[in-house]
Length: 395
Image (cartoon, rainbow, N blue to C red):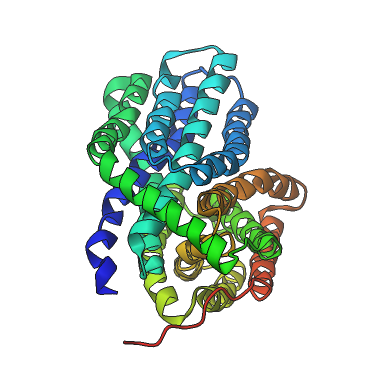
């Protein structure tokens, strides 16, 4: 374990890149909201279409860029991805053509998709024997980026208006300079890992487990559909069902994001100790009582506390699930990162409109009940995912 300790801290730098990359995607809803407010977008349907477009592009591109990262060491995809992600949103505030907006959104989706597999693979390499903790450090960068994105853009919007989109690329440019300066080191480690996996495949008959991966994706579907839809409709639920003001509704999403970031950072360490699949099963089950209790309370403070509990247990398995995917696809670690991270985001974006339609016909309470059912489905699915390792004894 000491052998990997010096390089394990390299993941804090990769975490910074993850933050810069996902800050662009996290800021996108706020950017589109202000564009609608200023008349650049004509309807809510236009806003929803652009969000769905980047979701679909992301879902298709991430497995492809993951394959590229696996076929040949390409750590440079990290900084290329960051720049594309930033370029795809920085000009949105300057244009009025809807087709051009779609093109820029597509560029953002490709950039986000290019970054995650390559960065996740490097994070796996540097983590060494502490892969759970290493991937947690990598993952929490995305949590922070999503949380900071709307705040970052809104702060500059108050001064610059929609021209503030130009500043969304700044963190990516800064991290790009850092990654280019370390590119030789990253290339050496990536090539060494590539040779090591090829040797293991030849000597040990190392194979990918596609059936186990499919079961893992079903788990990812249930988790993502439940949590992403919950966050989407939570402000409306607090306002229209619990009767709370708009400020309270916004605060609830922020609190969940903070709790999730802390849980993501800590979850990998527990998974290292108790086993990745075992830990994922435990937290998936533990999340259910909290989300179930949420729909049965009409007290806003209690509802928020229950949601914090749900958020903690949801995010505690985020990085372990990525590791499970990497262990099920040991010959395609980049693609495993792409599908667990990319599809984890995309599933939620694709199911939210369906649950929104359910709410239109039967009310937001029915939408929340469906979300609870998805959370319980995810807990059941976690027991079908193969055990990729046994709990490690404390040294």
